[in-house]
Image (cartoon, rainbow, N blue to C red):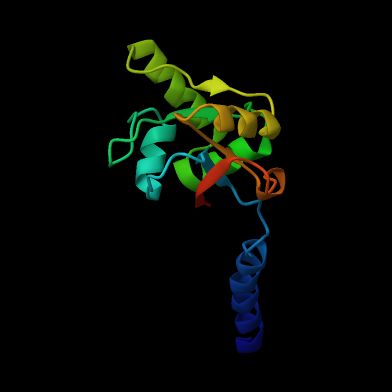
Length: 145
């Protein structure tokens, strides 16, 4: 009886560990224009991407741009940084828009379009997968989640 219980406990501990191994989910790179020198912690980035702030702690103004609702990187950003499911994020933006406290962010069609937009716009902040970012891209990785 004790060995069966021990095996059951070990299994219950090991299964979640196996499901959450590093690399089991795609990383999200938060990117800014290469001319932006400011740094930011996760909380400052969260405020920016949720429209609760328009600038970093040092005063650098940044405007978030998003990928489409069904894009895997958007879901990763929501899960890893914003701590919101896609439906919670939709409710958040609807509430901000309805109350007049904010507008929905601009939506870009692809990661490549996101990179090009951030390259051309010093005030843009976006996110992509590591695979989408080439060494030639003129963006700076501000954070990795």
